[in-house]
Image (cartoon, rainbow, N blue to C red; front, side, top):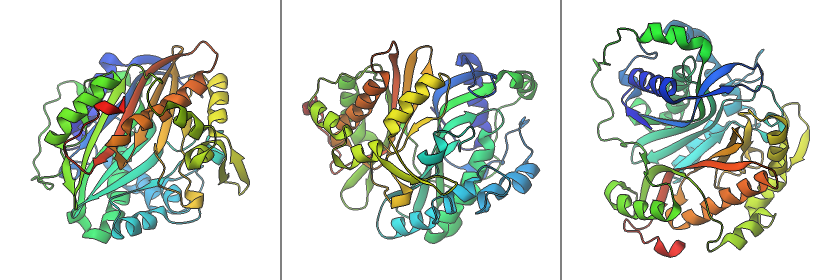
Length: 415
């Protein structure tokens, strides 16, 4: 997890971490060699006070980003592309999701999001959107954004995507709430954060003789969110104890009587022998809205054909067919049906070295139900692993934010 003001320090810190700690991996499609880390989380508190691109950036120039890349966020059309992010936001699901977000936040909701992932097409596509969800949180007069990116080339694409989200999507949503003065922090979660081995020589040259980042422009977002916290604990009981300890210290008051905290943690294992486990498995079996959303997801392909998808079965099939895939995504919410209230918003699975790595994104989620949320993820993992030889790898869970009506929590009775 990286916290900094702008893109320059974030890019350098992330690249250095991947070079030192990244695991070598070969891509699913073109067989390219990469170094990969899992769920890089970067919080930018003041993006607009820095340059669009880092110093000595090896990707597109600032001029090229502004002239050729940002227009793909501005447009509502695909043009010659398989997709553009502007089209995903405004036309893919036959309505403008950014307008939907603005109206939701204006009507009193604290959190709203635009979903770009369409299971009807993307589970089989060779080039689905890398950005899957753009989440917006209105706190007082400020709009904060969290972005989930399933696959992220941190050397040549991360700064470009941040520039697009901030200058187009965050700008557009904030226009309803005071314009530039309302634009606040931006947090990205990159499920597969990687660099290509072919980029290493250029990166070494870019970093050689680099001086520490400076911030010549004055701070804009005084008093904004400090960003998500990363819990140190890796076992469920210890995680709950740590939340109890840190929530009173770091949580913020939202409106009248609702406290929130952005946080993430990595569980080494999840034991299903807790309260509610039978109820969770019943829900995922098809009873209730979440189970139906996963088992019989109704959507239209980009070619206009309506289909019904069992997302869990599709994920199981994908795991068998493509062991290095970064495209195994489950999304219960359904823009086609204007459904945006199911948690977790997204689950991504990465099969690495016979281990199933998992990340799950929750938003505006009651902390008193956190064990239930974890068990939902674990039950899906259990079904995907099935009777084969796969082992359960790390499970990263993000609550962006988690909420409570009380600042003082008692979570011991949840397990």
